[in-house]
Length: 163
Length: 249
Ligand SMILES: Cc1cc2nc3c(=O)[nH]c(=O)nc-3n(C[C@H](O)[C@H](O)[C@H](O)COP(=O)(O)O)c2cc1C
Image (cartoon, rainbow over all chains, first blue to last red; front, side, top):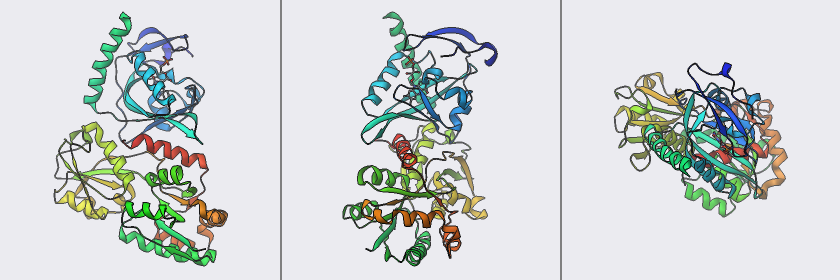
C-alpha cells in the first residue's frame, strides 16, 4: 500500500511505520486531533472477500479524506490506526468469515493524519448461501462507549507489545 | 387469478385512501382482478404471508428483508427519488439543542414504522439512550407524535422526514429538529410473491412508466410518490445487508 505523504497531512504530525497483516510496511503520519463524526450519516463501504475496497459512499469519502479513486481497489487497512489492537481486527475477521455479524468501536486514520471514532458493524454479503464480500456500516458512537473502548485498547496494546 | 395487494401495516389511515385508488387503477390497467387488503399488525401480515394470501406488497425495508430472504419475494420497483429518512425533534420548550443534550430515561414518541424506529434509535446512541433506558410510545400518525412532544408527554419524537416536512408551519414552529438522517439507501419497495411471477413484466412496465399512463400522475399524487424505478436484485440485497447492520439482535 502507498505510504502516507507529508504534503497531505496536518501540521504537527509524527511519523511512524506500521506492519500490516500481509507482512508489508506502511509509513503513516499521526496527528492528535479528532474529527467529529457527521450527524445523521452512515459511513458505508464494501470489500471483496480479501478486504479490498469495492464500494464506498460519499460520507466514507468525506471522512477518510481520500478521493473515491484513491480508495477503490485498496486494502481496507488504508484507514488502519495503530491504536487499535490486532486482536480487535482478528476477532472481526473470524466473526464475519464465519458468516456472522461483528460490531465494535474503531478509530480510523484519515489521509491528513487526523482520526475519527465510529461504531462499526460488519456483515458478510451472502448471495445464494455464499459469502461474496463484506459490508461495514458505521454510525456516530456514544462518547462514553468510545472512552471505555479506548481504555481497553490501551491495555490490549500493552499486552501486544509485551508478548 | 386474483392479485392480492397490501402495504406494510405502518401506513397511517389517511394514506390508505391513496392505496385503494392505486388498486383500482391497477385493475383497470392490467385487466386483472385485484384486491387491496390492510393488515392491522405485523403478526396479521406475517400470517397472511404464510397463508400465501399476499401477492404484491409495498413493504418497508425491514419487512422487505424477511420477504426477500426468507419467502423468496422478488423486488419489482423502488421510489424513483425519495429515500426514507428520519427526523428526531423535541419541543421548543425543551432545553435540548442537539442529540447529546437528551438524557436516558426519556419518553420517545414514534409510529409503527419499524424503519423509522430503527434509524431513530441509532441516532439516539450518541446520547447513551437505548430501548432499555427509555420508553417508546407508539402513535397512529406523525401529527400525533408532534402533539405528544408539544404536550411534553415525550421529550423526543421520531418522524419520517417527509412527514415532518408536511407538518403545518404552526406545528413545526413548536418543534426543534435535533438531527435529520442522510442515509439515502433505505426505502420501501414493491415486492412480488414467487407465486405471482407471471405478472412481473406487466407490473414492472406499469410502475416504471406510471406517469405516462392514463390517470397515472393523479394516482401517484395520491400516493405522494414521484414515480418508481426498477432496481436490480443486488441493489435490494445490498439494502437488506445494510438493514441487518442497523437492527439489534
Ligand atoms: C468490510 C470491512 C470494513 C473494514 N473497515 C475498516 C476500517 O474502517 N478501518 C480499519 O482500520 N480496518 C477496517 N477493516 C479491517 C481491515 O481489513 C484490516 O484488517 C485492518 O485495518 C487491520 O489491518 P491488517 O489486517 O493489515 O493488520 C475492514 C474490513 C472489512 C472486511
